[in-house]
Length: 197
Image (cartoon, rainbow, N blue to C red; front, side):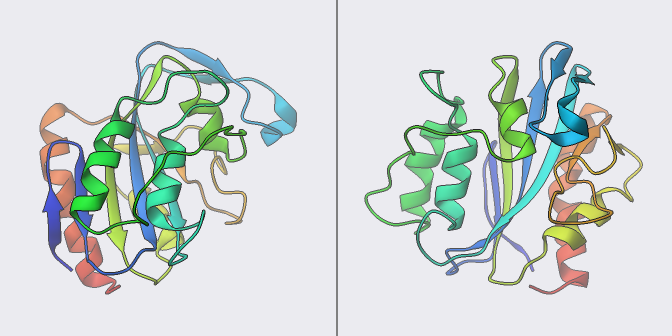
């Protein structure tokens, strides 16, 4: 599968499907101490400054569990907190690539549910890029396990972000040099070619 859309913040594979699998790139701008809900009995976890990936999926063709709605949810923060800067870019882009219902509206009254929600709600954590595969095939577990084979990727804590994937870790730290990021879309393309969606 080849890239169907790319710019500085978004990289998309496939077209047509309203559902899919995604990788979020997060930048933590200062060391944090975060409670990830009930993960590890609610004990705070040290999150070093740096880059992170989160792998998820939203496979429905419509509704709250469609890809556009899920990505907008990730780009929103709870209560009156300011949304991630990338959210407006999503609202501009998704209609152009026919992703999501029209008109597309961001969610209101977000409740923290998934592990990544607790990190994305922090003012020092920025959602900086989204890599998404428009396909009804569930690739989340395969993709998360593939990321863990890359030398620049390590688990922050084993099991984090993977409540429905026993033995998996879906929220991982990336300790890559800046040039690695320019090659990541092609690395992901090669993975998708070997695991057709």
